[in-house]
Length: 83
Image 1 (cartoon, rainbow, N blue to C red):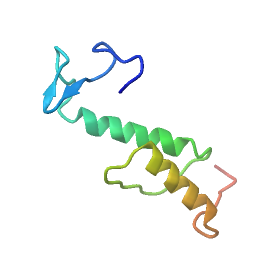
Image 2 (image 1 turned 180 degrees about the horizontal axis):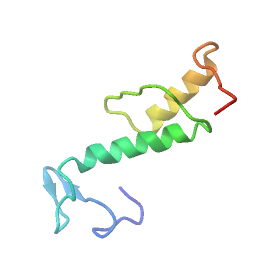
Image 3 (image 1 turned 120 degrees about the vertical axis):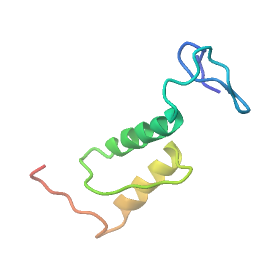
C-alpha cells in the first residue's frame, strides 16, 4: 500500500511473513512505528502537550480526531504562554 515503497524503504508483510531479506530491525518495530506516528501527530497541534496519551489500534485519523475533540472542548485544556 505504500506509494513509492520498496523492500529498501518499507517493511513488506505477507500474512505472518516479513518479505524483507534482513527481516525487522527490532522485534517491536511495528510498535515503535506507531509510537513515532503518534508523537508526530501530537506535534502537529502546534504547541507542547503535557499529558498522557494511550491508544489501541490508533492511527493518524484517530490521532487527528483526538486533537480536534480536545481543542473544541472548552475547559479541556489550557495554554501556558510561558512555554
